[in-house]
Every structure is written in structure tokens, then in C-alpha cells.
Length: 102
Image 1 (cartoon, helix red, strand yellow):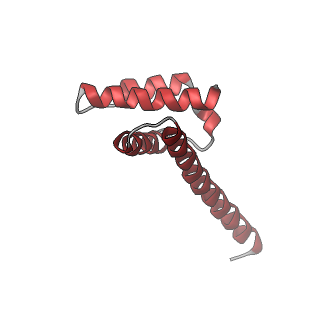
Image 2 (tube, one colour):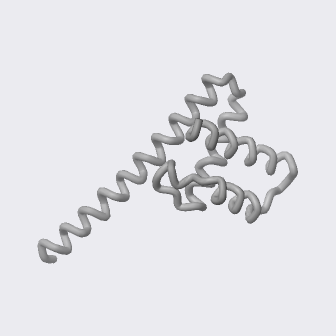
């Protein structure tokens, strides 16, 4: 391999590492915020997993990529197992949106 291809591979690895770091950081901050607001352990577990799913599905790499349109589109296209699950997704995404843009 030549120097240029090694350079691009290094950049790709760094971008991937940054994305993993961002992903873990936002989930950790979100979890801490839920604990601060005295959410139950079950709610914290569900909300963190729902946020994780949302970030992966929407391929969000920056918190400011989370917009109202993306949230609404995700909620409209998601298939839910129950009305309760739908309400939990809405609550989770509403919380993260107000947390980011408050």
C-alpha cells in the first residue's frame, strides 16, 4: 500500500472512532440526565435503548442532526408492538429533543 491509501485508511478509522466516542458519550449523558430527573431504572434502560436505536437507524453522527423532521419521520415509519411502546418512543425522543435544544 502506498502512503496516500494508508493516510485515507487512517482518516476513516479516526472518523469511525470519533463516531463511536460520540455515540457512547451522548448515551451516557442522556442516561445521567434521566437519573437526575429521577426516572425509574426500567425507564432509563428503555429510553437509552430507544435512543440508541434511533441514532443507528437515522445514522446520526452529530447531535445537531437531530431535527423535528427527522424525529417525526422516524416515528411515522417505525412499526410498534403496542401503543405503550409508541408512547415510550415519543417520550424518549421528546426528552432528548428538549435536552438538546433547551
